[in-house]
Image (cartoon, rainbow, N blue to C red):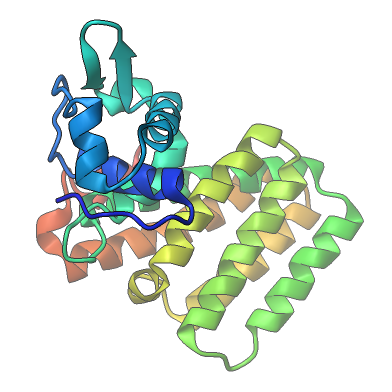
Length: 248
């Protein structure tokens, strides 16, 4: 439920509370938020800060305010953007990640990684290839799993830069926020270091040879193993089966 808010970062904290309640379903699509006066009193804020927060929620595609009707919750899957992903991942009330959303993140990561690897094979410069080799070399060290996970993600960040597509670069920032927020979870579904390192070597070799299909297949096979680990750890989470998804 709503909690009183201190004076610092008032509008941001209002946004966080209301966004969380909407994403968790406390306010469902079509529901009207409490009247402005009542909502301000419950939160312990002034109405100017509340209006600022409501405007921010409108910009996110979560609510719509109409004169005479108040503020109603929208179907955010129809109106919001990809920036909500990291908030949806943390959508449960007990602090545990939302496994359904994480499954979607992992599927996106595989398809995205496969495609940007192919693009990198066509577009990467010698300097960019050298940076990929440097990351792979650092990942060869005997490091804790979470450190290897960071380097693995850094590898895909560099692949994305090498693909030189602005939209893809912005999209991977959203994935990075979700991965960083739940690094311990992703460490559980990261394939063994030997498999990770082989993927890095295979991708670099394919990028050097300008073999886009091989680069894409190497990433797809590696990240498919991560999806299979998720199914093994949480068998009830699989919606259609990893095998069916891998064919997409």
